[in-house]
Length: 401
Ligand SMILES: [Fe+2]
Image (tube, rainbow, N blue to C red; front, side):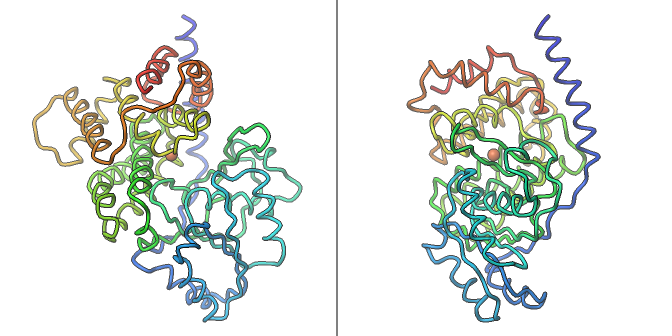
């Protein structure tokens, strides 16, 4: 009885919050895509009379020389830039203060960030603090608390997965408590996104696989969730199709720019979808594993995805059948069979991407705490297709260790 009352509360909360979120509309950033697009940017900025820019570059991307042609291009057209490369993996309140000190040295017309999710979040968080003077990041934690729109930001993702270039959230960690939290508001969206596959061709296969699976999880969790609009249904399904057909190619042949380009497009679409339609238990479960054991986000998500889909069972039959059909499978399977088929294909995909079925080093004694935190994250916010019991969640964790 207690559980069912709790479920009723969760669903009522979601009905109310989904309506509220649907009222808050925003436009996705402008997109510039294709091979070597980043190198065309300096000329375009010059034409827009941009004079001073703040450039944040992921340290690995900078070390590999992948931003050199762009920085040279800025010099050639006479645009002044301040370069910042001390991006921290998983930005903290302290690391953002450091970036802010650099940002506040001059007045900039715009900021350009070249990097993965951590770099893009660093840029978003720095600009939030710069623009919302007097407010501390912890005061802006949660939904829709950022009052002023951040100054113009161009995001150039160098991994195809996080979708941070198009999401309305930025994640920061408290240095003292190690607690991770998100600041969510349409006011932190970049104005423009550059999707250049040449920046991702040097990514190692494992990173390509983990980040690509993260994007697949974004798309699937959104598609089977209960907070969709026509738009999020359409683009999440498109993202699933693209990833299904291109992730393995991008992992096996990293220099295949067509597959790389398509993965960037899919990650962007999945980002557009889940920033409106949310994620589900896969993320709630994986965040705890990453917090406790530093397991890469995409890897954790990939391992967890089929387990959670199994737990949902018949509740996701309709959507899984639509995914099955959209992926072009022709066999005349029943809905149950189609769901099991797709789950099995995800196991096969993980296997072909060298993603294990279980995690090493995860301790049974931590499961209770992880489940508690997972439930706190998922309930009542995530519009999951089926509310899972504490026992089911414990079983999912146990199956993976
Ligand atoms: Fe994710």
